[in-house]
Structures are given as structure tokens and as C-alpha cells.
Amino acid sequence: MAEFTRLNKFQQISLTDGSTATVTDKLGEGGQGIVYRVKLDATGEEKALKWYFVGNFKEPRKFYNHLEENIKVGSPSAAFVWPEQLTVWNDDTPFGYTMPIMPKVYESFPKFLNARVRFKSEEALVNAALNMVLAFKALHNKGYNYQDLNDGNFTIDPNTGKVLICDNDNVMGHGQYSGILGKARYMAPEVVRGDSQPDKITDRYSLAVILFMLFIGEHPLEGKKTNVPALTNKYDKRFFGEEPLFIFDKNDNSNAPVPGLHRNAHLWKFFPSFVKDAFQQSFSQESLLKGRGRLLEQDWFNILMRLKSSIVKCPKCGDKIFMESDIETICGNHKVKPVGYLQFPKRSNQAVTVPIVGGAVLYNYHVDNSSEDFATIAAVIKEKPGKFGLENKTNRRWLVTSPNGKTTPKNPGEVLVLGADFKIDFGNNNSAQVIVN
Image (cartoon, rainbow, N blue to C red; front, side, top):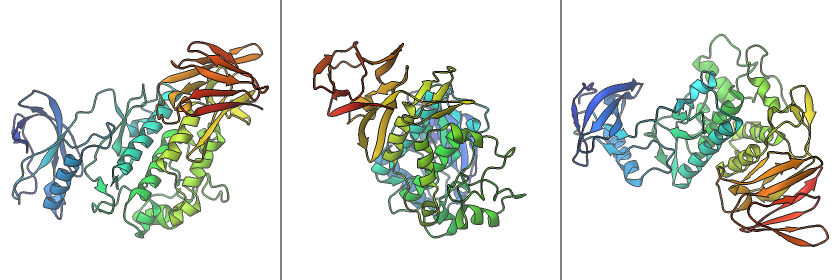
């Protein structure tokens, strides 16, 4: 079998649907093969072509059939840059597949980690996390697991937080195994130890690592203990498999961040307690050593929605901060606390609150229990001296009940004055209670 044949510019490749594509450029090269830019001859549309180093596969026919099956089943969501067409393959030739071209506005995740690219806003940052979580919820719900989730899989639009996930060729159905364990530092500890093969449970560990790095800019297990001259295979197994310890573990600070070395770790203090609690659960010893208690994608989604609605301007200095609903929040050298918060029914056992601060935003998610829409604004908290109101930006009428039982309608565009213990019925089986601190 020919292990690999590089393609030349203007070379024509046959696809399994009977069409052809012509190579126009080389986009990149990695461990598995080369990615080329190609033009579909029938339509003129540009695509990317991943062309494999076939000699890397013990069973290339099995892998080819796996790609064929994934193409047939289809992408779990638009976030995945999914294989579209296989090239025609005989056992004595190389093969590859076409996929969409990545838009130029998207930047690789490592560029965000090394601060070569920054998010336009705090909202875009949280949107990126929400998009990641929803993508993996869709993946797992469709019966797939990723198996090789790492920083190289993500490209992000820094302006909006939209996410595209590439390198989906190792995605497998639940119970199947691709032979790929994953990338060092992103694999679940049980995979590093050799106790388990990748599955959706280990995916959830890797997703938590990605989210932590997105927010904090540091690896959750790299602290004082891992400050060694070189992370050899021996140390990798020890620090990320046998003796893993969260850098912000509540019960053991022996792997705490090293000042001057872990320069982004100070960002931890600016995140709300409920986000810290989520990471402490995700990287608890129960999770790291037993694989238990890892958050589901829906749990993360609800936590992140709470985080997005906590983004407000500090009442004292005007800086953007994540505002806690019922306890003091650190902002620079001072602390602030809202007058109260809107309390919604819990979702999958996660609290849903919005601090009562001028400029705080409610999304369709908040006013419709069946919605996961985190982009459409449903209401905005308005502030006047001594008063706070909620502007109805939906196309539905709300019903507001005061503590004395009086009910008042609020039509689209109107503002209701928020008072202690008021209850707001948004329709769609959802409501909120006004809680005063």
C-alpha cells in the first residue's frame, strides 16, 4: 500500500459522490496528514481537504469506513466542522475527506491562551464557553463522544464568541474506541492511568479543562507540584494521572499557583463563587481519582447563563465585572453588592439568578423555560436614583403580582418598578421573584 502521496497544485481528486475537486493550495500540515484548499469542479465552491498519512493507521479500511459512517449520520451541530465527502479509495492509494473552509475571522484557541488574540467583550468570552458546552451536549445526545478533546480543536470568533470545532475524524459512537487516547494534559486522569478508555465521561473532564483555561488562562492541574524542569512521560503520568491535584483545591494548597510563573491565576478571584464551586467540583479528588461528580453539559450551560447575566458595570467605578447576586463582589480595591436579585426556578438543580444592577440583562433563556437562547435580549434592568425597573423587550405581556396580591400587566416596551417580593409571570411557564438583600 502506498503510505502517503503529497498532492500537487492543480491535481484533481475523485470524490465518492462521483464529482471531482482540484487542489489549489496547501493550508497546513500535522501529525495525521496535510490539509489542502480545493475547489469543487462542479460548483466552484472552495473546501478544505484533509489528506492522510495512511501509514499511521493499523487498520486504514476500518478508519475509512468509520469516516463514511460519520458522514452518513451527519454533524451533531453547526459548530462541528464535519467531514462532508470522502475521496475515492482503493487499498493501494491514500485517502482523505472534504470539509468546510474555516472563515478568516476565526482564531485558534491557543492564540487566546497566549494573549495574541483577545475577546472583544466579557459577553463574547462567556458566549464562547456557552457555544462549546452546547456543541458537546449535541454531540453526546447524538450518541457520539469526542475522545481527543484539546486546545487544538477550537477556533473562535473573538467578536461574538462563536465557536467552530475541527479535527472531528476521531469522533466515535458510544462504546466504540478510535485507538486515540488523547492529548497530554487534556486526557482524563483515568485515561492517563490506563484505567479507562475515552468516553463521554472523560469528554466532560476535558471540557472542564478547556473551560478553565478559557476563563483563567492556566491549566487546572499545573501549580507548585508540577514546577519541574521538564514534564516527561513519567511526570505526565504522575501529575495528570496518579496524583492529580487542582491548583485551587479547597482542602490542599500544595499545588497552588506559583507567583510570577502562573501569571493569569489571579483572574480566579474575579469570578463568582458559583463558577469557582463548579470548577472545584469538576477537579475534586472524587472527580480526578474516581471519575465521579463531573458536571453535565446542561449543568455547565445553566451556570454559564448565570455568569453571563452577572456581567454589569461596577456601580462605583464603571468597570465591567461579574457581579454576585447576594454577596459582595471584588472590583479592583473595593467591594460592591447589589440591592437584590431576580430569582428564577432552578434548572437541572442549578440556581438561576440575575443581580439587580443597572444594565443587567435577561435573555430568552430566562423568560422561557424551554429556551436555550442566550443571545436574544428579553429584558434590561433600568436604574434611576433610588429605583430599579425591568424593561419588557419581548413581544408578550407580563403579569406582575405585588406582595398584597394586586396583579398588574406590563406590555412590551413598558418598565415595571421592582419591589421586594414582587413576582413576575413571563408566561411560557416561567416566573421570577424579586429578592432584596
